[in-house]
Length: 414
Image 1 (spheres, rainbow, N blue to C red):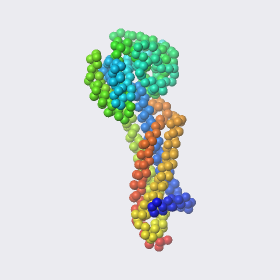
Image 2 (cartoon, rainbow, N blue to C red):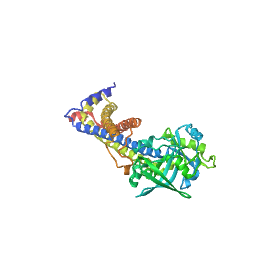
Image 3 (cartoon, helix red, strand yellow):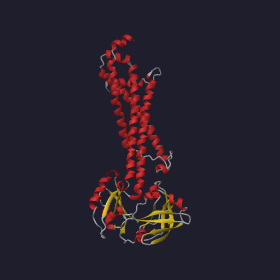
Image 4 (cartoon, rainbow, N blue to C red):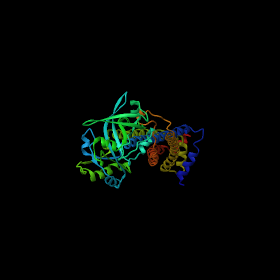
């Protein structure tokens, strides 16, 4: 242990003295650091949790990457593209791809005796990853997804069910318009609720074969293939690799393939999510500023209160550098204690919300029913290190007050 650290520990051990003028200032400084760090931790956890939750919902409805017919980009109806088992297998074997699945869409209308509603019938096959849909299922069960059997079952959203007055087990007529009107009767076998109005308002899930037959396509044709990636942070690189292999290539029927990421398909939504990072930066800046202000004020009060100690140390041969190190060590101990309480407070509230969902939100406005929390442990560790380093660097400036304290003047005043 160095000489400066030893003295700083002794000073820190005497901060509990009730007679010290600096005691309230030290308490305020510590709680300033604690509250600032707690707010920063909660802000990061909430923003990352919210972005992850909304992103997962969008991906749940459309995958990370879509391989579609190029003409679908300029057509009100999805155009067919051939996606057979061999292509799916080749796509799943590509680096970065976790899963590949087919989908087929057909626009139409659901009608009851009292109301009607325009919808998009989305058919999927047995390879469809039902994790997302099962998680948001609120009533009934999922339809039997198949590419070889028309089950006559559909899964609609809670929003549709309320508008049409339907519940699980009810039958509903659907009408599809192309060259002629085609009518089908479905059984509402399940109801989901994602709180993403853009999707809940339109998507109806059924088996792949039903919309395929309604469109008059061949058995190996569908609207496209959805790819799920292993690492979302590498989405752009993975999309580019798939695009290099498939873009502008043609299937067996002469359709031109086109590859797009979920960011390209929903640019407005992902731009909005990116803007949330600005809020985090503003909060981090304000909270670090709060910590710096309270610690700087507290350290100045402590130095002014310890002028006699500083004068005695200088008369015994201590240099200004030694004394600055002593008070920087002392400040590090104060910041460390404040950060300890800040972590306990911030992580404690984050874990409480994560486990209980105590704070509720209006899903019509925020897309989620409670404040979502995701704890990025590495980022929180970096946040702690950055807070400590920035605070100590800024606190170097007030310690230069020590060089203006002259032992002879202080002792004569005493």
